[in-house]
Length: 278
Image 1 (tube, rainbow, N blue to C red):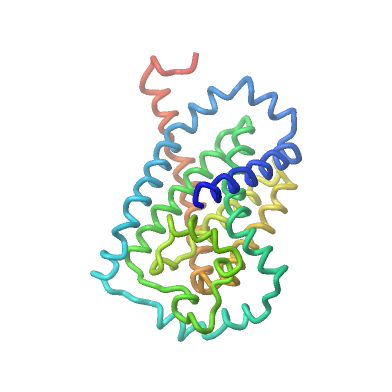
Image 2 (cartoon, rainbow, N blue to C red):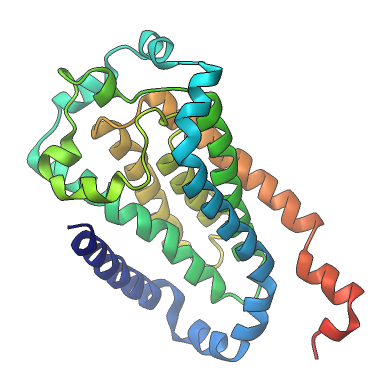
């Protein structure tokens, strides 16, 4: 079943990426990219390696995160509920089959598309800084998010109130459990990484709107939809979403500073003559 879900995910996201590439990137930039892809790959290789390492660390560390979290024993589930109340219950009371289908699609397919497409769109730019900032911000999101997951124990609404909050995604589309259980842990909901990564893309889309004005609008709609979907589906609290937005802003700002002040590829160009561009 997992294989079938993954194939479906790849097919749908690929179609969305192809359509968006045609609409927002265009033939001119794609033609340019064909002649310049080597230098662009070289420019982003260092941060790509760092990001891959962060993702590998996350996949390994998340298996042990609950054990470390319980050693610290900082459980914020009750304080979050006391502060937030029954907003998620109210939100789910507005549910309809159409709305549930939309937010389920957004949570699975829209989210992955939102992360993948800007990598392609920014790779098609002659200036590599937007892409390097994007990949750096992704790395910071995963790294800082992992630290917060270790420190904070928090159960989501559907785990905290199983009789009052429906697991709408799994009740409607049970096959997605095979996909989400590979990365999700019940105690890791603060902050919402779905929200933080989606917000990261939306912020950077706004900052690079002179390149892709149409994508800026699409990214804003998708970013907001992803944030709402995490609450509507009973996975995250409002506080998790707010924390995710804060994490996104911090990651984007740090990425801007780091990419502007320190570049492995530029350092290598300056210090190692044999690696300079010919």
